[in-house]
Image (cartoon, rainbow, N blue to C red; front, side, top):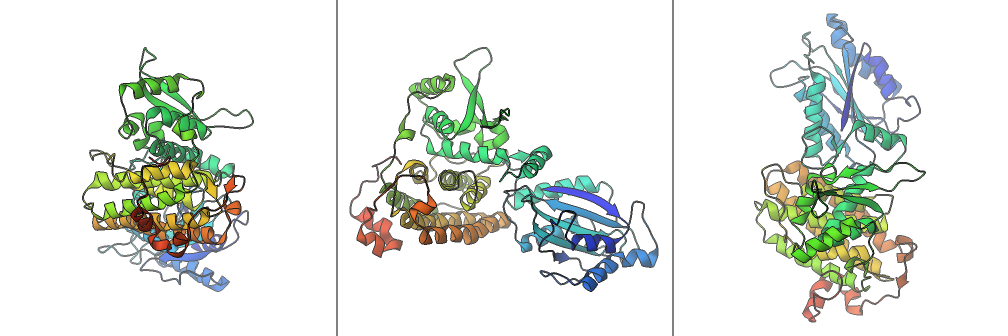
Length: 504
């Protein structure tokens, strides 16, 4: 979240601008999101010209009455913007942010005379940015001045808290919880080039999917290269036998140089030492990994190249159902287990996003990113558990590479239902630990994105959902069709082996 502060001498003019079309007709759906105790404004609707003028007059009123006329102007204005592709905040969340910010900066509080302020929303800009404007009077109702000394530093600290609490992308240089730190240059480039999201976010999701789906380091390298990403090792100083880190980049077009990011610049849990905690690390695995890193390109594909059977999707539904039952027995205080579950679930959604959404990240990508934030451990806390719910690691491989049939959308609808239960369990654990904002983000994702996905899977054919992929004839039996909620238990009861296929 980026905040920009300015000052002015006319709230009436500012209100006309905020409720007007903007310099390039970029203002749409202009409405009041929130207002302070010193100024009441009806929220959630477009205002008339007279109401807009009255709103500006109310903001100007204290300065007009007391004639303070602070240097630079008596109106304090801040714009808060999110990068394209970041999680969508609903009006209630923006209102919480605005109110919290105005209390933090001292415009109102229990022991202070209030100053008038109003928050105005515009929806999403033409460049894909969600943004909010807050206009406030620097003169309180009793004629005293609002002290905004070092307001930019205070704003930066507040934005860092909002990023953490609301599961938003972190601006580089702030103390976050391990997720990508985006520089202002990256955000501006994303808007300027009309990208769906910052490249660093895309790359982090590709790395996360490859890491969760892989059994060992060599497979991770092959999967990441197979995703279209560029990857290169960082060897121990003075040798070529020990890889101590890596960097990755998205492929570019038109001769542009790729932009490389070390694993730690993608997310703190994507450094190579951290990823190695989740892989098999025998001597043979280590030698195979060094050989894979050293090769210009992968020459001998492994399990990641196998195409799974269409019936694997049915196994994936059963596996996620088992993981939900395991999560029910995990104490909410067991942070490594819950963060491990979030990590693995993020891998499932990342793999699904790459396969179905491609270069246009949608609900699957958004859910993967929210879960990835839930998986982060703070400094001094134990890392996510390696075998938290190992079934989800197999599901990631199935989602990434199993074949499709005409019955796949039906399996996907069931799979998304089970994954929705997983999200709910993780959200409930956050809520029980008092992490209400994180829980709310997960619930919002569950109620909005998951419902959207379920509707798509139920109403569209496999050719519409996955154009260009080879599709086989449907193979699911009649019992599965007739008893969707209990199909996973039904197939386990028939004695179907859980070890068959690519997911193990």
